[in-house]
Amino acid sequence: MSLVRNHHRTRTRRTATAAATLLLATVLGAAGASASDTGTAAPRTKQIASSVLGGDYQVTLTAVRSTDDEYAASVRLQVFTRTHGAWKESDRVTVGEADGWFWYPLTGSGAVCAFSTASTEPAPLTVSLRITPSIGCSEPAHYVVKQGKVYAGPAQHN
Image (cartoon, rainbow, N blue to C red):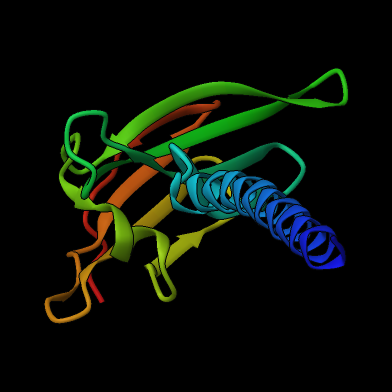
C-alpha cells in the first residue's frame, strides 16, 4: 500500500511540475515575443538634426521611413517660427527625392555629413547626408529660409 501511495505522490508531483513548467514557458514566451516585437518595430520617423537660428527660426531634418520599402526613406526639412512662445511649423520641403535615401545609414551614426545654418535674414542652409558608408556623403543641397519659408538656394562656392 505504501508503494502505491508513493507512486501516486510522485506522479502528482510530476504533473504539478510539468504544469508549472508549461505555465512558466507560456508566460516567458509571451513576454519574449512582446519584447521581440517591440525591439524590431522601427520608428516611422527619426529627427536627425536640428538648429535654432537666433530666436526666430528652428530648422529640423527628419528621416521618414518609406511605407513601400523598409530600406528606403525620405528626408523632411521643416522650418518652425516662434508664435506666442511656441514653435509652429511655417514650411517644409523634401531634401532630395521622396524615398531616395536609405533608412539605416540615414538614421545611424554619422548620418549628417553637413548641416550648416546662419542666423541671418535670409538664412542660408546647407545639407549633406550619408548615402551609404561605402559611397559616403551626398553632394550638398543648398536652401535659403526667408520669412519662414524654404527656397532652393544658390550653390555656395568656396
